Amino acid sequence: MSREWSSVGEVAVGESPLAGIAGFPYSADHCLRGLESQVADLVHTGRLFYQRGWSVGTSSNYSVIIDRNPLELLVTASGMHKGRLNADDFVRINDQGRPILPGQPKSSAETMLHVVAAQKMLDVRCVLHTHSIWATILGDRFFDQGHVPINGFEMLKGLAGITTHDVNYQLKIFENTQDIAALAHDVGTWLDEELRVSGPGPHGYLIRKHGLYTWGKDVAEAQRHIEIFEFLLECVGRQLLMA
Ligand SMILES: [Zn+2]
Image (cartoon, rainbow, N blue to C red):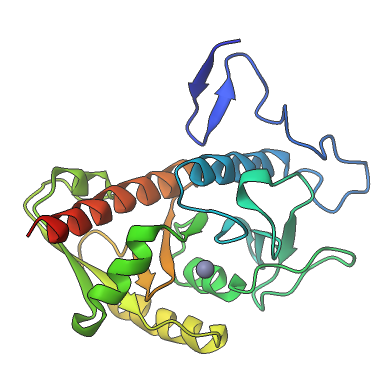
């Protein structure tokens, strides 16, 4: 069977996105029943990002906002290999980052970074986080100036709301920490400031020697933002090597 790229990953032509994912179909009382398409989108995202080297091993985490009143997110479970996610490797969590239903696996350690993005940006429906090489090292290389400068690249137009290459884009960098509550607070404060400024964005941020967070109005847009940022970061990194 021929294969093509769907909006969220590689799916064979004519094949259900749920096909080839262990754990489907869910039983009648499964805590993720009704969320099959969101789960499948994130499984395919993991396979794609693993293949591209952006989510190797158990690194990275992904979420979809499934309700806002009250806030509920579908998040990858802690410690799962992102190239081999199955239908049970997800957790439904609340605005405290805690599982909503009993018997679910532990959610990602960085769950509150997903929650704060969902809380601050009401049009966001998906948050994606990757650990690529370029995001990891450029977040360190430019940490002292607070952002990675990304200037004049045509591919900037792949970020929602940017319509010209002629922009001096600044990709914010936060210090890495294991105190995720403190980092989530700092990210929330930064998002408040960014959202007060008119114009496109914010689209994402780096964590020093760690990785990239971005988001979108759906899984496809968040996935595109990962692709665009990864391309742009590699451009900046390779230009430094050539200098
Ligand atoms: Zn991480």
